[in-house]
Length: 481
Image 1 (cartoon, rainbow, N blue to C red):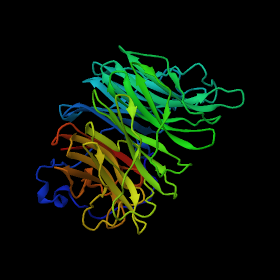
Image 2: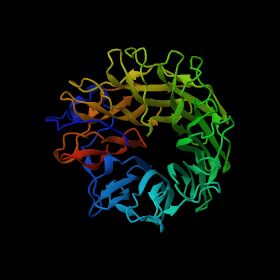
Image 3: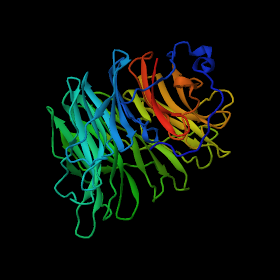
Image 4: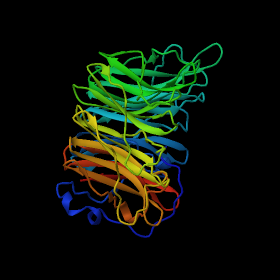
């Protein structure tokens, strides 16, 4: 899950209106967050987990995650129709699920209004962790279905999940994840992709690499994004025969999964760069951009981005951290929606870094006409010392090239974590604004925060996240402008 940190209740909050400067008059007007209604018997969100949000038009969105019960966890789907969040949906587990199946939704995408797909994992009755997909057709969700893994999947001791899904239209989706494959010596952690065509999901295909992998390549596929139907890019990492971790790029072309390729790193990368690609964004009927990290020859952990156009990937560019960054900025990415593109060559990215004094800060960086600028530090409300160890930028959305929005977490003056929204107006990032939590709640707690933010116009935005209610119970919230 997102955060591992400690906190107590904070006495005061800085409101949204009080921290947005007058110059931000064209920024959206953020409303107070509203608590999510959970199904009957729910005991909050496990570890504050409400990770995924998708919107087909302003005020028409769906979100997914999980909620806790006395017997375990259930898959949670939230639906917004015409600006109103309706009754929550419990995703029915597959037929072979254990009594306490721990159904968790990791990815959710809608190809059209009321026609969506959700993916994730659950526990079966044999003690395996299995991957699932589920479909919404005509605003009705079917029960989840176990993914049919490639023929080399282990039968006992499986640990499979789908992490990400992208739907280009109703009944046309692509998803990626990883599973355990059979071998005479030991099982191996490998990747797989699966696609839905005309409403029917295909059997999953193993994803391999063009490089020589380790015996156990530990392939992890983090995210997928699609420029058009069945033409997608998935990103992650793998380990080669020399035990070096590489950033992995995998293309789906006309529904066929290509072999993954290693991302070409910046010139100052270490021979043992430990690179990984966490996030990807694609522009419809155009190219894609990715965000990741790598180790330089001096041992510094830096951010990187690379772009794809007409099937050709550029060499990755090292992102320049803010001027106050430490010699080793320890760049960290949360792996949710840390990169967003309004058009080809016009993107924004964000995450966390450490400044010269060793404090954790958030960064925001912009690509303008194909060139990445120097990143800027997130400007916090008065009295906030830093973003904190578990703070920084978590989610980004770009309705226009010079008007993006970011969701983040930060430490307030009392040393407690809060959720933050940061608006970019005409190319300039404004001072962040604290999210006013529901019911007088005063902190997002160790695992809460603003997980996902979608703005389809510069003024119409929807977000989801979680906050701490009482000593240890997390509840969900929705945010709107």
